[in-house]
Image 1 (cartoon, rainbow, N blue to C red):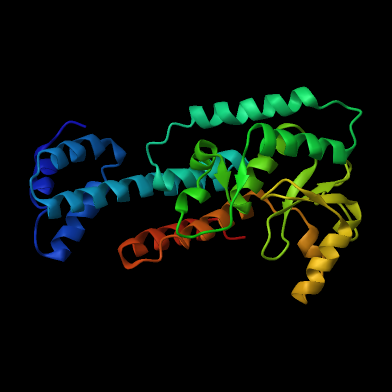
Image 2 (image 1 turned 180 degrees about the horizontal axis):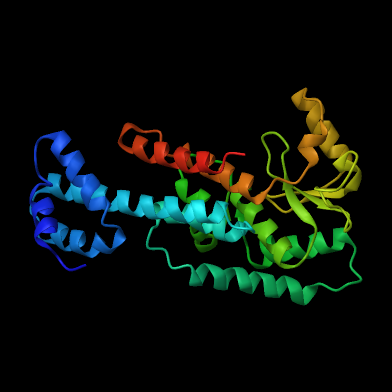
Length: 290
């Protein structure tokens, strides 16, 4: 962006010791939009004061956040909530300059490898075995325990890069594959777990009358790709002392999955120095409230 007299004047006030003045200056700079970021980066490079550099970094963060906020609202209001695109928006919170092409290429490689092994004669369980074999054995995706000390486990780009993710991110990748391959398998709302239910091909959550569990063949643990039965799920509910109501067996919407991902990611930023990130992630999650 071409620097104007007003921009230059605002830049000279970034180091003002009065927090109220700085707050006003910051808001005015953010109002210019992300096109002002190169100017701020140049200012950062030519500034000797670490305090001023920190303020510049925070202004740049606010600009990226504002941009992400708008993108998420646009995704929310779109006719179709693409799950992968939603997960990539979450990545851009921590990695605003993320290039999505390598991620999309990795996803396409996995999809193609699975597709080559599928045919119309396979049973749902055989389809699940192919999916799990390619994703967890051939591609070598590992499942790790949820650890809020490791925020990268919640960002799909880093999960694909490191080939390790927690139940939620692995579950999102698994469902993305199913969506791309027209396999009727969805993440469901089992407490404290990320479980994928393989539904009968004719099941539609919006029109089905009756208990959705009646339309489920079996389940897959998103952490490992291991399949398990109705009896296994019943035993799990017994251990939890929770009645297995129908709501637990309905597919979660893509919007709800991304909302959960934002809420879980926010838990990684509970230290005082990062509380602003936690607050922002929860604000983004609230945008998707249903």
